[in-house]
Image 1: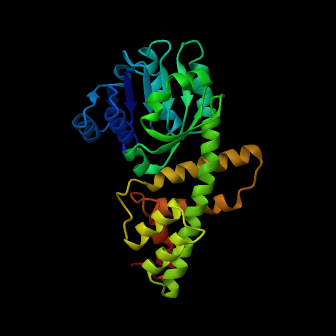
Image 2: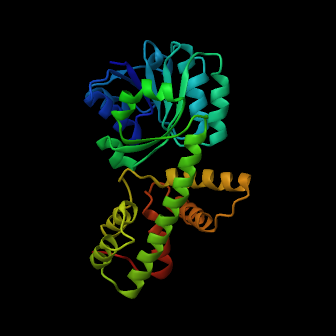
Image 3: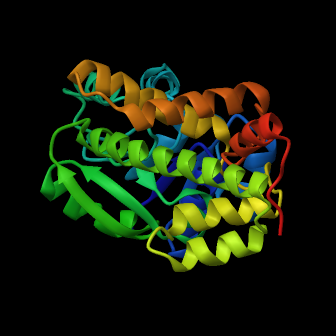
Length: 296
């Protein structure tokens, strides 16, 4: 049984920790939030005072932070993972960041003897809490084999998408381009229905049973018609950040992304107007323009 750690105990990281504990793995954790640390302790995790303590005598550490700067800090700072993780241990990067940031970290770890598994996840808050996330894992096959049981504790589907650092993030960016675009189309369709006088439950029943019905669409429509725009575990800042990564990649590669660009603008408006809202809050921006709301 491998000793594990979790850095970042928010909506996603707390789910990873919970399922590691549920599957019998010892888990040390760290987060800057005292309330998150308290919750982690209540579920059976061992508290630490910094990332270095998480890494001491630990075989695999999951890192679920918001951006590349935070990732570099928790790994490379004097109280970071690099100072205590023993050679042969793995850093499993489940955060969504830029692919070049992963490559930079890999270069910094080149002579450390540590393994870096670039494995962003999809499935949101429900998937994290239920242990059913999809992982887009990039790393040497022998390393992925060695740490498979740890990753299986938090994931239902582990896709081996490559061996080079950053390939996991590249695949995740492509996925977020699609998901962000589906979100924006759903929000616009909801607003159109609201202005036309369509009942929200009717719209949900039709959408969910049609060819367009999927987890992304169905969940969004449910949240909209129930008017649940905050506290659902899908903060708007995350998708806004992810879409900015998507567009950066599209510019670097010279690939026009017409639909994803529109989605980014919608999420930018939503994040500006409702900074504490979840993804579905984007709908409120459109509803305020048209003076109509979609309800059950």
